Each structure stands twice: as structure tokens, then as C-alpha cells.
Length: 161
Image 1 (cartoon, rainbow, N blue to C red):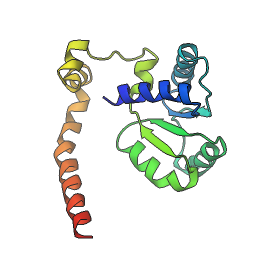
Image 2 (cartoon, rainbow, N blue to C red):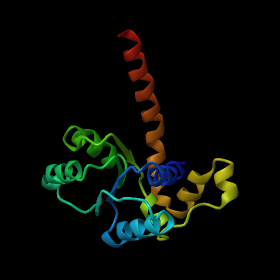
Image 3 (cartoon, one colour):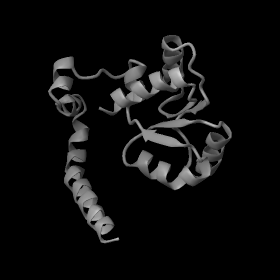
Image 4 (cartoon, one colour):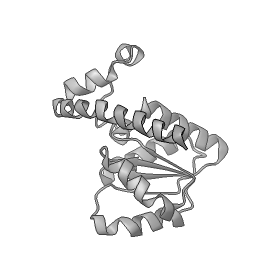
């Protein structure tokens, strides 16, 4: 799951000296995430952070701030597909080597949202737990086939090149 990759990247960042930037969620949530990771990994150097509440016209200045932070990794925690579009649109400004959308992971790390029980995670059914806890997510499931078709069609376009 994305949250597992996210937390592993934080561990690696602490070990290798990479500086993450945290972008998204409510102010108190992102601050709690940083506090937890700093407690868990005292050597972790944070490049910066920002909550996820902003006007679209602030996007360029936010991307410039991320660039100025000299972050090695950017974690973006807001909804899909907004985070993916935002990263794509601003990557050339930020010039961060690696960016990852982490959705609601900040809320989980900050203990605002519970993760599925371990057995559900182990059998690949964490998504079902999340849909049961947050029924409004069910409408998003319809976008999965569209996404897979886009991936398949873009793969075909690359094969032609």
C-alpha cells in the first residue's frame, strides 16, 4: 500500500540523509506527522512542510517554496486525482528529484483515521475496509477501469515509438 511505501521512504531518508517535504492535510495533521517521524527518526532532516489548503493562484509560489527548500522527496497528501495533476503541473518548477502522492496517509500517521486490521491488509482487502468506513469512496471505484484503459492505451502508444 502507498502508506507502507511512504513510511519506508521516511526510514530510508533518515538513514541516507534525504530531506523530505510534506505537503497536504490540515495544519495540525501535517505538524503531528512531522513530530511523529522526528521522534521515531531523530536524524531525519525535514526540508519543509505546508498544509494542503490553498487557492489555485498560490500554486506557483508553493512550488517555488518547495524548490527553495532543496527537498529530496516531496510527499503530497490531498485527494486523487488532484494531487497527481498538481505534481505533474508543478514538477518543472519544484525540481524535486522524487514526488509521491500519499493521499490520506498523513491522517493515518497522525491517528486521525484508522487503517484496516492487519489481516485485511495481508490479504489485499484494505480497500474494502476503507470503502466500508468511508462509503462515499465507492463512486471512485468506477474510475479504476478508466484508469486501466488509459494505462493500456498509453502503453500501446509507447510501443509505436
